[in-house]
Image (cartoon, rainbow, N blue to C red; front, side, top):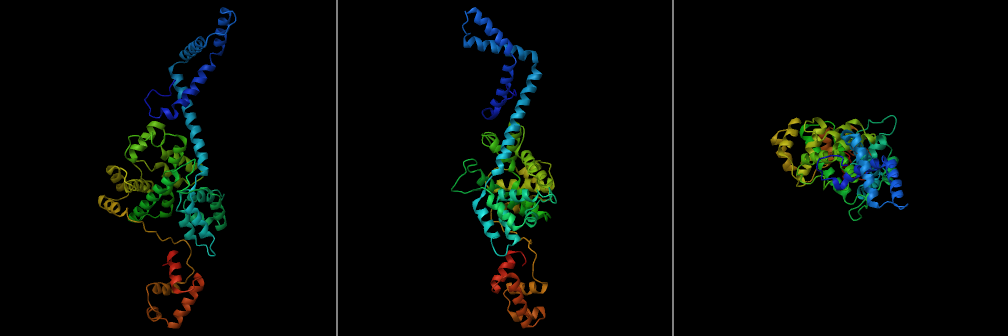
Amino acid sequence: MEPSTRTSTLRPIHASMPATATKTKQKAKPKAAKAANGRAAAKASDGRAPAKGAARADAQGASARSAGRQGSGERQGSGERHQNEGHGRRLTMAFEALEAFPALAESRNRLLTVISKDHVATAEVVTAVESDVALIIAVLRLANQGPAARGRVDTVVDAVELLTPQTVQALAGRVRTFDFFERSSVWEGAPERFRLHALATQHAADRLAAEIGYEHRDRLTATSFLHDIGKLVLLHAYPGYPGQVHRGARTPEDRIHQERRELGVDHALVGGVLARRWGLPATIAATIERHHNPEVEGEAALVRLADMLAHYEQGAAVSPAAMLQTARSLGLGPEEIRRVLYELPSSPSQRRRHVDPCPLSGRELGVLQRLAEGKVYKQIAHELTLSTSTVRTHLHNIYGKLGAVDRAQAVLIATERGWL
């Protein structure tokens, strides 16, 4: 008995699963009838066992009679129940498999290098974590496990500040890794493809956030990186995903429609469930879950539009009408979107992160700023109404606070940490 009367392209993937369950149930009911028929046939043939064909016919007849008594409504409900149970088992196993989703080896190694420095800069740790999906997941999950911050840490910045460098270092050391030259037998090339699209979406989201002056850009970094985690679940749960499910679909809207039609769920919904299962805040889970909703607003709209822009940047088809509809919900018109589309293929500029508190006083920062502009001691002293010896004293203090040996290193450190 089939779980549904419609034609499904996913029949090779999962149609046999509910049908097998139903068939087992049907065979269980006619045991008494089958035994009686067997005894009668044995008597009629001097104790010899009935032929296999006759046994199958008896079983099929008993099953048909039993199914007829149940009625078509009960058969349909049983099939749907078995199908849902099958989907649940598949998704649960996929959720568990994602516990071992690997990080890019280079990202993990860079994070360990940053943490091993004598002076651990929070901004550098954040940048290293935000270079990889698996690292973001691991840090956010751990930060949200504590009773004081459970379900409230929705940025990598807050997570890194909450956890000690030693904790992040130990966490990074336990994360599994993948490398371009060493493919995983479980995930194959999926981590690499997923990371590249996540990075493209994050760059587009940050560009859009700058365009509209969006306040929560650190959280947007996390949600834009994690927006498609549901695809990893479906990839593990259904061997024919995405190729067989997305067959014939061109745009993101087409693909989400195909998922709902063939699987009964879509990757956005599954991703939201996974985020909640991990204990991530509702601000992240809701954005993931709603990022393909055409009526969406706020951060989910930013991620939806960024996802379209990332597909466009990677040469995939997108719907101009859907893109413009989402842009208008953010207060953006065709001219702004044309400008973003023009700029996106260029190398993204790294946004300066003001994470570490600046140890310099306002006067010291003013001296260093002018030093970075190439000005000499006399010019700096004149602009700040100081003596040349006072400028030298400030520079000596700056070098000590930053751990720099000369002016060039002091300017570099301050620039990298977002103080200049």
